[in-house]
Image (cartoon, rainbow, N blue to C red; front, side, top):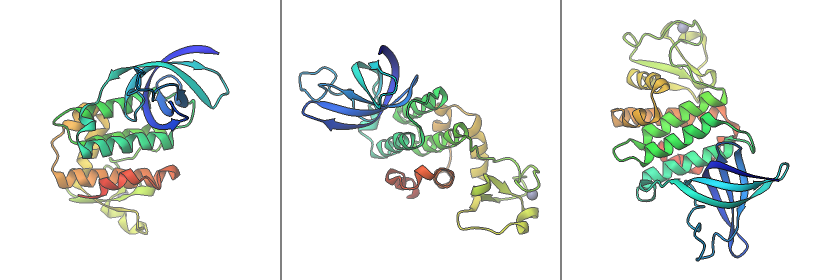
Length: 257
Ligand SMILES: [Zn+2]
């Protein structure tokens, strides 16, 4: 057994016995893990409020290898996301981010880029003046990239030529293939129910989100109908490419305009 320290985001917390909680944490150094936080429901405990979903903490825990559940001995806030407790849309999207991480990441699999993506996205959601839907779009695109199914927004997936957005006002996106198809190649495929047209402004925004920071993407000025197109695209794309994301209820909010 060793004593370890790491940054962590609380994904889930359930009450355990009279005074404790079992928490699912996404940690910087050890990936996803379950832990018992003893005494956290005791009103006198000073870390009672720490182990709530969305909290970003520094924790100390006793690590035993090959154990399904670890013991957390202490924790402290690294940052408190105040806006996430007062704004319903921001809270819903934040909850969908932690739910997605809980579903797609495996136990004890370190992935620092994904950890940083989660913390960066929660921080951007917490900041006043940012667009919650843009944050979701940013998070989904970069998560897909980290998980190995990065979407292509540049070239026709059949002929590999650059999509010319000055000529094409909308582009047919084939979700399963992870790319758009140009007009010239369109008759070479059989359209399916999960594919759809993206407007040229939506495709341009998706291209730009690939290289922006979370904070800059969150503040990008994009018309609301296009923001809805983007978050809907990411919603459909993630579900098509990940079996574990089929039934996330918290994502339904993104489908409403
Ligand atoms: Zn083509």
